[in-house]
Image 1: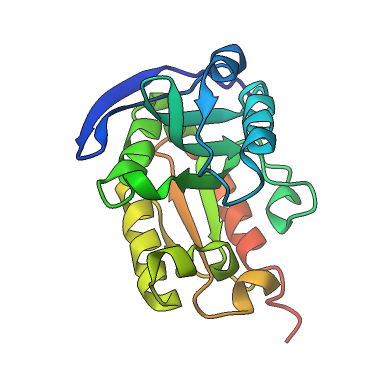
Image 2 (image 1 turned 60 degrees about the horizontal axis):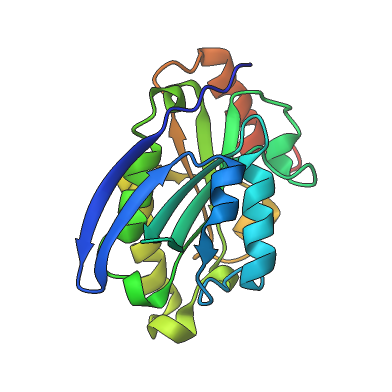
Length: 210
């Protein structure tokens, strides 16, 4: 499967300054930017920057960034699911995962996350994918935001809705382990019926066990 990537961008005015939301960004361009020290949700900033550069270099990998001048203050990643996850078992060339989304505290609440998703979906090539994201409450910044799991889940759902992702039921054990966890997905306009059926089989792999 081909993975064409068309660059899109938009400017967002915020009280903290104007930011550019753009991508997909090639690895060599990512390397030029500074990675904000508050981007610590998944790993230390320098390590996360290195991981993003690697993802940007993958054939299917996409990184959309939010930057204030030359500093990255937010990003979203898309790539094939981890080989250890259920979602890779179908070996579906048209299924990619929104793996991570992060915005520094100073730029939250201004629509940065929603616009990262909107800019992602400006590329017509996204209509050729089933895009999934798995939301686990243990990744959420409950302490920093002061929200409880249900309030945070509502915020995450609204943000994902901005990119056209909707809630989908599944029996995947980690997602099923807590009612706040969820699977969300966006099925592109050009996805064939057999791919949708395969995705449904991946969502409910335990249905014959009961």
